[in-house]
Length: 136
Image (cartoon, rainbow, N blue to C red):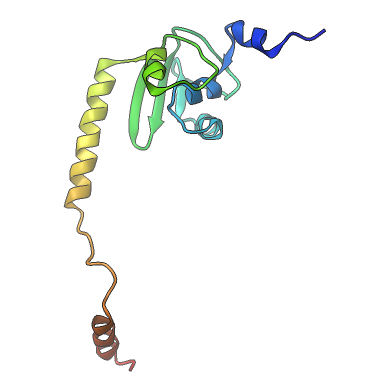
């Protein structure tokens, strides 16, 4: 006779992709799975598969959108909970948090200094462009 699914979850065995989804690092399990396949998530310094069982105390290095997170797993969960509860599932390294905030400020400054176009040309501007090119 097979055991109910609820008992399996209580055994303390949680897949890494499911934990990353439950901890709200990724919007879907598929995105978490793809990040693991691409090597953007390291567990204790090693590249692992999505099916790896995560344990309390594991150290994860996540690379998400040019930002790095160094976290330690504190709690296991298989269900996605509100963000306030998800934050309690891990602890982030203070140096990692400072580096990430500095990187975010650098990216914002880079984006602000990037010259933006004036948008789509008006009808008059298109006519001027076509006259200039000589294709009227």
